[in-house]
Length: 462
Image (cartoon, rainbow, N blue to C red):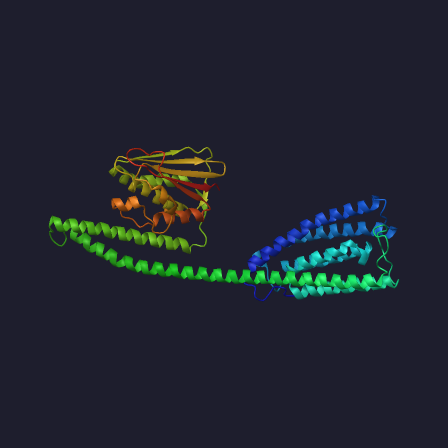
């Protein structure tokens, strides 16, 4: 039997939801058994209420049966496990399992209702709750069929009890006068009870149906947006890569002129060509940043492995040391971790993020400045602090540093070239590792040279 709505799009979400609900049914049923036991003891020891011999035997048997089939359901659930990749609408799936559980519960509840007064039993009202729960999981026609059969049995037995064909079990002392033999009560109660159950099922199923359909439509729309984003990123990468080729060709011609392979050039012309060569390098850097961001956005998953963050930082410092020495910048690195644990992450992406941050510190720190890179740790995470006494970031601009193409007003005033994409890339890489990055300016190294900036990265241990 295919119980899954035809418009279902996101099957994994459906199976995951049903798995949680099935486990919830099993757990809550243990509480129901406990409630039955408490009720049974209450009925036995309250002197105003009395049960006959059959009821005294039947109620514990029903309680034990509920406990027994619940333990069985628990074992079935553990054995089947219903892996998302293996669930199929044409095979036994979590929806069928939910249906079976609901049927067992309805039968058990009816037996409890029958042995505590049938139409007089206060437990009959629990059918309304079961109808609403079933309506939020199962298709409407299935729920209406189940409760239609239930009500038919319920009312038929009530009529047979009225005519004395079936013995009526009641909780003596619960009511001052018996109600099951009152034809007016029987008629009005049956009518209202039927309206309450079918009305509850209808409204609950309608609301659940609309919410479920909207969820499926939303998932479909999100997937289409993701597909459009992927297509856009691929298009961007293609165009940007094509732009890179002629710029590289121009650089080759400029190198020929600068190297005087085409003959001598005047100092004035050589100076202009050197500036053009530098600007072409900046253009290539912009292109590389855009390509990196586009590639990162195309990654649905990242390759995670145990990564030694100290090793990555040492490698980056060795690369940046030449640039730092050229500006007479003191570059310090210290490892103050108390927990020397590795990080589960993509080595190349983390190297790219840290290289951007350390490179920015070198780039935006004045001659004779200072940069400190310190590793801290807690039991749960590693903290990477990159602190400098560079030009800093204005307080009112700190909230914008991770936006695409953002560049500090201080950087623009000093005429330092850049893309404004480096920190965006860093933020995306840290986010894909479920980490956090913060920025602070002035830094603790702030002095007369510059206010400085501090970046802190928080990454969870493996």
